Image (tube, rainbow, N blue to C red; front, side):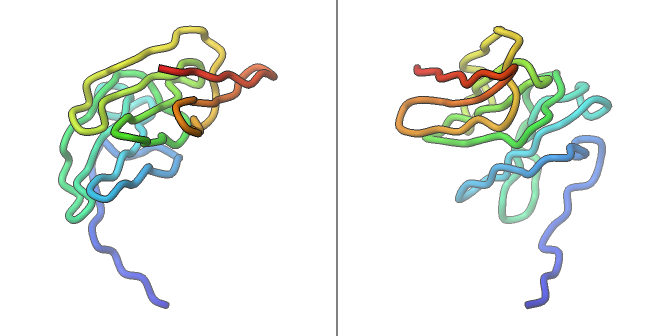
Length: 123
């Protein structure tokens, strides 16, 4: 199969080295240092790439995860933050300073790793 660009988001808000999280209507892309607001995550409309919002101001090193309307991100390789996936409003921030990697979710539990440990979070 041959693939062609459907849309490309250009500009300062899209330079992370991680995979986006994709849902039925949105693409969530992490930002790193030097991007808009010096980091965070942005939501784009999946059909045409229109920027819908950006949230946060710290670097995101790993791919985000979206589950049940919640966007989960690893902030600066240390913290787990959660956002409302539709609005970008921050819902939760874990400041244990040990989180790293893409969050995984099973049921109502979020799993992540860091510093030779596995962490589990519940709402």
